Image (tube, rainbow, N blue to C red; front, top):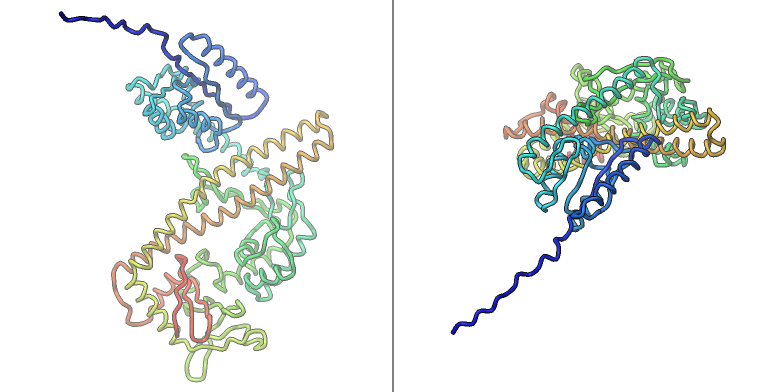
Length: 513
């Protein structure tokens, strides 16, 4: 006879409580907003602990950050990391705009959490991401939140535009030769001597590279304590601030919160006599004319047409020995090129002249090699350039702009406290100096990145033109001046038997002559 034993069902000892966390964000670190944050903390802790089936997993928050990007939100990232570690089951957020005003960020984050079985409840919109039909609604509401953020940004832009138009916009980080004193550009007399010497050196015929080398030999350092380069000297000579004038809105932020160099898309504002000049307008214009005429600015000439009315290589040949420019000269019964420095003083530069025809022949050989080896030379370079451009220059520029704006707000705030007698003079001076130093560091990085972005854009355009030409696979049988003008930035004479063609897209191709 079968024997049946009943196995009793296990008694429910109680389900594991749902570990619930909350996320809060305030966009500024003002006292009012911080009070709001404290209120949110208390609210969510009481709200979650009131549910018997919930376990309070903590509150995560961010202070003084924007909602348009998740990149700098440490509290949010800490919460997401805890989700990855299995410490959170459910999240409560006041509204979608508190979570993120960027649609892509919202959807991507929600989907990743849903894959882990972690859902979010948005109180204001009454959306639970655990319900599949909520994703479409989430997308729509994120777009609305993003529009709200754009509206706020437009109001800020309008305020800045008004300051541009009436000339009251303050320069956070003035160039070498000036100091920021209570928001005003004041001449630093010691640095101003160096600025005047630089302009005098350019006007006397010295190249930016030579000027930089002499400054480094003298032990003179840049504003950030670094070494001088020809690029730095070029930038100084082009900087209108040394004339006492100011050009505003050289860059702008688009509707997607990305920064761009202003190439005519937006108005620019020229403010005359904004501050005390270091050099005269006449010296400034003359120095810039010399720089452009020598063709030493790599890929950023303002007037390329001037080379079409005279010999294409004129002013584009640089001496590999002294850094000076070469000129076209008559050599017995043929033409050639000679170093200006060598012509003036053979003891200063020993590089002798070279015939013209071998240089032309070297150009033909170089272009044919590049065409023939397009897949091995240009295509890998194009990939490398793309990777370089992904380095996050524009993202960092956006971040720097936000940090500079916050810095300016803090400086104005402590100044108000000081004028109202709420801040001790010593404390005010210490805080003001620290903020000024921070602003100078941020603005210096901003200037350097803007130069890189500008150069990167034009370098990419030049590479596209060269790729298009070489794709035809046509071999040159003779020198073509138009082709040289389109693709070559300048020539470097390393020796009388070797030259280098510095292409507008970046690389330098060497050839024997």
